[in-house]
Length: 368
View 1 (cartoon, rainbow, N blue to C red):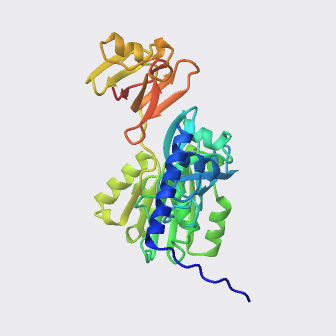
View 2 (tube, one colour; view 1 turned 30 degrees about the vertical axis):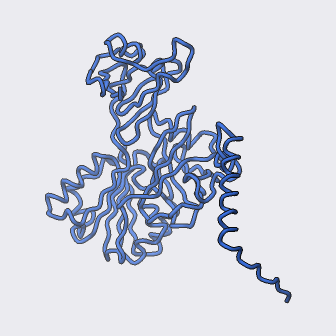
View 3 (cartoon, rainbow, N blue to C red; view 1 turned 180 degrees about the horizontal axis):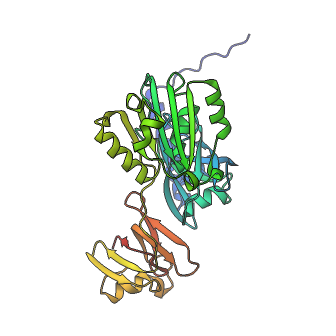
């Protein structure tokens, strides 16, 4: 087996000269590439590279139901992974606007690939885009996985899982990771329609393997789960550690019930979706910086309403400069007067909207 002679280490002055040459070459490339920078070209060649912004590519999508799909994402090299039960915030660019949403991770921990399971919601621009839109191969922006809706090591001997609707997703991630393999586990899951059930074959297999009891409630016909009936449904529920995720009403009831029993330390809750404001035609618009609130109808652009009230509204529309009127929508919904599209913002996920073509669709707050 042949070997190459070792190359001698260059002296320190030579190393310093090499660093200066590399730095100079980068500056020259930056000047030639203006208004872009070399990193922009690296992003085009390898958007998932180490050292770049944290991103992921949509590798595949599988339809689970008519309204639900599971997407496989391949994260960039700096992805730190996740713990079963955690969620990830994803930035999706739609019509030139980046919209952030949080989704539970439904796959076991893996080096770079993970799945999210998305269900469309009413007026859900991002969820509809991910479930039905042309997303295969596209790049999304990520934050590192986070959340404390996780399982201790070792897990409790006896576990109760209470989920509703898409609140099943973090629990699905836990079960796929084997987090409760050695626990005696009962899952109470509620959905509006049987057609909304996902992963039914997996749940059946876990139940057949033992130590796992899966019970489904179809609320349209069976009604909602009444926590007062837990003594009949799961007689030893007080002895179990409980993980609950689902609609706000269900979680409020769980917190009140466990508190009444003095068992708060045994309840773990994940509120997977911020409660959205009611959508309507027109409403009270609050201009936060100006500390003004106006009652505006559903046909008047926010730009006109603000200007008529003497509020300083940024705008270049009348000079032919588009997007000069963008403003953060921090709460509530607005309707695009051109096509009727609804856009919703929250304090956690404010969205930039064009005030010249957006009207109030219920009470909303604009950060102006």
